[in-house]
Structure formats: structure tokens, C-alpha cells
Image 1: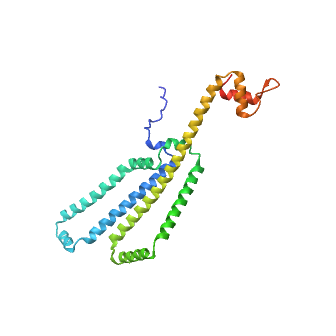
Image 2: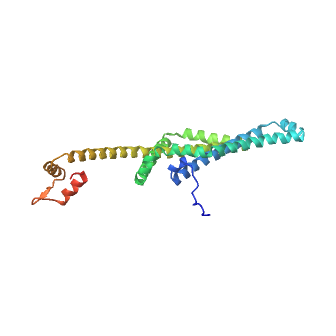
Image 3: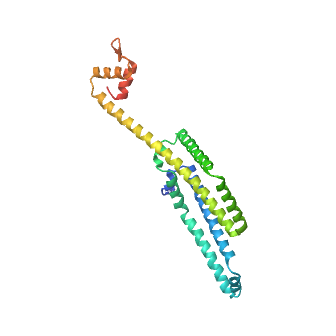
Length: 256
């Protein structure tokens, strides 16, 4: 019995297929950074809560039956597993939503993805703006402001417990990731803005060329020669013969 030809397994279209490998990697980096910052904030809140529990609560817990103690820890572990399941279930959709935010109008970007120079020029422009604004802010800040920062830091060192420090680190990581995320979004969206302007101008030029071709095709041969001479400043014929450049121009315009 002859073997049936093998068929490639059907593969459903993935919404992430329109993005490049590096696009997805960058989106994953931001997504995982947000997840890690969120987990650190949760751990800091959890540790702060445990440290703040009065001693008599622990005494009450130790007086419970072993089954109740196990049930309490089982509920705590179940809650943590639910959080992990939530992050796992939201992973695929989260990456896709992250890509949609980061890379607006990907079709235009793919058409002009070879224009890397434009991306770098916009990046340098934004860096210049950021450094200028940052320098102005530093210059405006007075010595009193830095004194307040120093006193706040000393107060944190003297009063923070382990939970507070973990929570503070999580918030700092979250803010840093958010800052770079916003900078990346602004960079990409400015690039897409310039690309949209380029696309509009190129489409406008294509329409103008098509209108011109239709107009040239309706002209008589004498009118075409005058149009060619007006456009190029060169003669269409030499010694009664059409020049090679004129023939090429007519072919480009679709004229016979």
C-alpha cells in the first residue's frame, strides 16, 4: 500500500508574527522587568506585614491544632500559586499588548525598516533633549533641596526595616523600568511619525507621476517632444532621429 505524502502540520497564525525577533525580545524584557518589580513590591509588602504582626498573634498561631496550622500555610501557598498562574496566563497576551504599545503601525515600519539612519538620528535628537532638560533641572535645584534629600535618606536608614527596604527597591526598579519604557515608546512613535510623513510624500509623488503619465500618453508626438525638452532641457531628436534618452523617457511614461 503506497504511503501517503506527509503534510506539514497546520499552524495557526500568531499575532506576534508581524514583529521581528528583536521586537519581541525587547517587549519580553520590559514585561519580565515589570513582573520582577511587581513581585519585589509584593514581597516587600508581605515582609512588612509579617514584621508588623504583634507577638501575641504568633502565640495564638502556635496554640492552634497542627491541621489548622497546615491549612493556614496551604491557603498562603495557594494564593501565591494563583498569582503565578495569573502571570503565566497573561504572558502571551501581555507580550502582544506590549508590542502594540511599543511598535505603533508596524506595517509602515516593516516597509521602511531599512531606514536605520532615521532611527538613530531620532534617538540622538531625543538624547540631546533629555540631557538638556536634565541639566536644566539640576541647575534649578538649590542646595536646600539636596539637604532635604540627605535628611530623608538618613531618616530611611534609621527607621526602615527589611520589608520597607525590599518594598523601596521594588518601587525604584518599577520607576526605572517605567522611565526607560516611556523613552523607548516616545523614540519609536517619533520614528513612525517621520515615516508616516515620508510615506505620505512618496505616495503623493507616485500619484503625481501617474497623472503625468496619463497626460503624456494623450499627447501628440510633437507635444511629447516639447514636454520632454521642457522637462529635461534636451532635444528629443537629432538629425531627424529620436535620441535614446527620449525613447527611454517615452517608455517610462508608457507612450508608444
